[in-house]
Length: 178
Image (cartoon, rainbow, N blue to C red; front, side, top):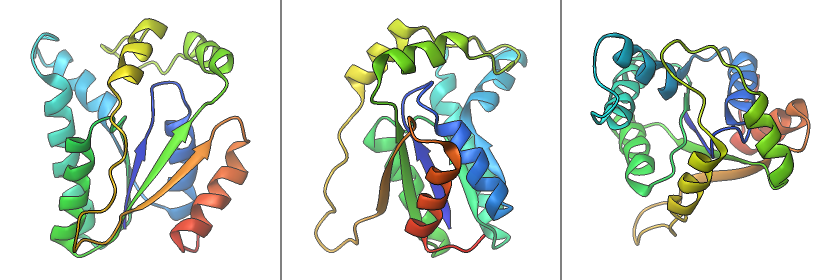
């Protein structure tokens, strides 16, 4: 199964995704460290490194799925093109795709988490609250299933809830035993 995390920076998607991956013994393919590595390799930040990071993450996830393993993709997935990328990858492998969108409905808590976040990704500064607000404004709604296509699995998790209950909810939703 391909499990694609989604949500704004600082909402808690990496925390939930990593905890879920530990329970599934599945690798996490995270876009931010990939983008940071490209920058450290000399690709300028004014280049489309974000898009390139998604393409590299897809290639890595493709290899994991080819081994017959679950994979958790950690990315914002704010636009339909990114979500379609994961649906297409899963379809190529004949495996299900599930989207776990993590939200933090408490704006003050979300802002505080972002301000206190120190992931230590060399070459990748933490986004500002203003940047998250711009991303929120550009975040595309999730479309309904297209005619003739099954609706992809999508679960919205509230990160004001503790991590372990969210992981248990996700596992039950996915129908996967850890």
